[in-house]
Image (cartoon, rainbow, N blue to C red; front, top):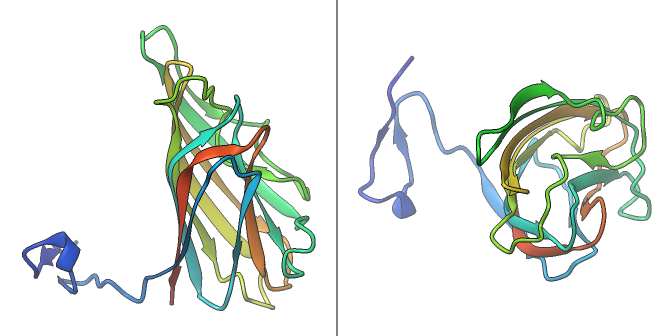
Length: 197
């Protein structure tokens, strides 16, 4: 395992690494800030990998952030998916802690929206959801499209650490992705979309 040494004095000016890693071609493509938004949609293109960052997503009610894909430029969000999910959680008062598989959040050849984290109670304004999602080679017309996510949420006086992985079971290229809450709107927060070659 090699050590990585930053070659610049400040991270905001970072242009290269010394070692076996590199910055690659990670490009900020788009970002969206929610304001009582029913959903947020992004166009996908020909990048080999997309990475989405969720920053302080806050719902209007107790709900989960969800996604679905489109193969027809956003006319329909109904791509067949298979996934698995598990969760670690812990309450602030230490009365409950657990790690377990989430059968309620997995999909088996389903066109339903994919849940990315356990429902959070957003009644307190300081509670929210942050994390990331990777989608691999969505423009492929040969292979299924894999995705993985990790979401941290704070709600109902507890912390959730939620992992989801799966694939969109289609050899059609994915043209769009849509994010929404399982109930209510995305009240606040930001989603950043990066492409990697």
